[in-house]
Length: 231
Image 1: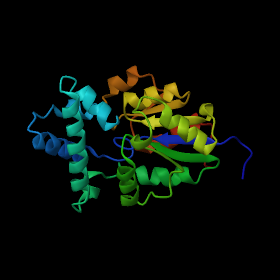
Image 2 (image 1 turned 180 degrees about the vertical axis):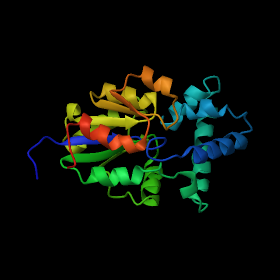
Image 3 (image 1 turned 90 degrees about the horizontal axis):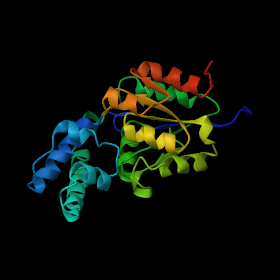
Image 4 (image 1 turned 90 degrees about the vertical axis):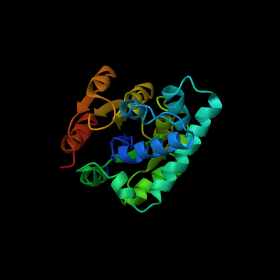
């Protein structure tokens, strides 16, 4: 045990922990097909990953009527669930290489706590955690069902309250500008990762404390930023 202050590392999920773009794009294709609407460009869709579905389609399709955007969100959720239950979920949302070992390492560090803050639903997050055997890894699990969409800091405020950690002792790790903006708004440190869905230049403009290019470097960066060691 230690009398050092609690530390908290909060991870985004899609594009940070798991590479879910195949699953996301397949669900998008199905949703737009169901409504007989033209599919946006791949880059435009991936640029909105991490937002709640209502906010995602509001940004992606600002000229569509609100009821059509709601129908797209519902069709996307249905398609995502169908794909998830077809038995090939692991192929659609694999952990990025080295991520499992990284989480195992961090879980052994005291007094570090782990959390997630994601635009996924509770059901979607539970599925990913179960798929990869991570059900007991994260003390705090913040999802779009319970909060305003990123970049509103409500998810991180809840994670801090739930864990008893103070914002200066916490870091938000994510692959999008929305994650960085959310972390800044909550008063937390921020780490951007470049293997996800926002281009590196966009992440640099969001002014993270550190931008990391390799999963293998992320553990050391988190521990250094939070003034921790796993020696």
